[in-house]
Image 1: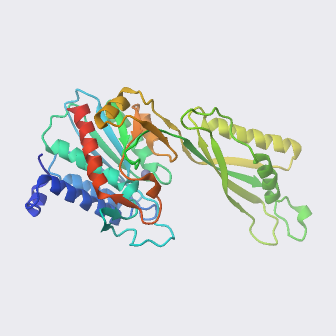
Image 2: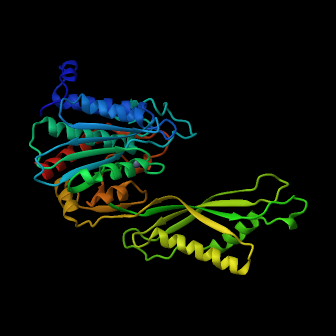
Image 3: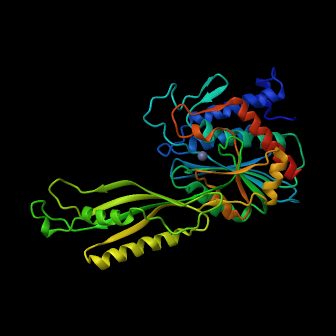
Length: 397
Ligand SMILES: [Zn+2]
């Protein structure tokens, strides 16, 4: 196995190559956790850490850091090939959710190694998968293997909030990547090959009224009262859909409500947010149309009823055919025959706009994500790197 940067090798001359990459993976993981790429701080520091890893790898992998808004960043690492075969893309995200209010046993952004695990925010979701994919890429390219198809690693911003990074990556690079055999999101699936998840549609619905003094409510229109009418109408409502054999039903929950400004003012605005999880047959626009139809129905009964709906976030469902040739080949290489659906959503549907099949497959237990004391088993880093290397070698050499 060939290796990485001469400077690093000098520093680590006492270790063999496998141990060196194991050390470098842990080091990269730790630095990415310390970079604290929350929405508040942005992904730039984490992007720089990843770009440095490729720059110091001693390979000719072309790595670009795309910065915007002062602290946001995407990283694209591209190993070019003879172009005889379609390429492979690893689609990761750089950002993490905040540490939360609950007490951690160790500081969330100070990685701590204990009992074969590394604890820290983002260790599982999804620094481990990102590190393993980057290491696999460096090892294959560093070995001098002749690539017949390109390897691309896109590490993007904002997956946990608005998917701004993947949208930017696809719109800026979509045309230049060439044909792709498939895409792997190294998100934590505990090494289950994931081909499907429901979509996500977050809506803000606002009712309008008219302010008046609280002592003379007959002069105003209470937006909260109108919201009450709407909430009663929405009780038991589900957007129209057909139950999906793998993903089940569409679900809907109303999770926030805001209204009113003062105890003595009739409120002129009240809003709710609605979290709808969709199945592949549903168009998100048709759901908006259903809400508009409900508003029209309520207005027909009460001319003072006024409501509007806006989209806060929209991610399509993911559904890749488990028998797609790309998925089948990955199942062969990894020896993992079963494919599954997961409850969380991903940037997969946005990467899917690059017209290649998408799967989610990576290290780490999904149930540790977004929680205090998030951790990754160190042995899973190595296992993931080996899987990704095997996949790259099978498809591209
Ligand atoms: Zn994630």
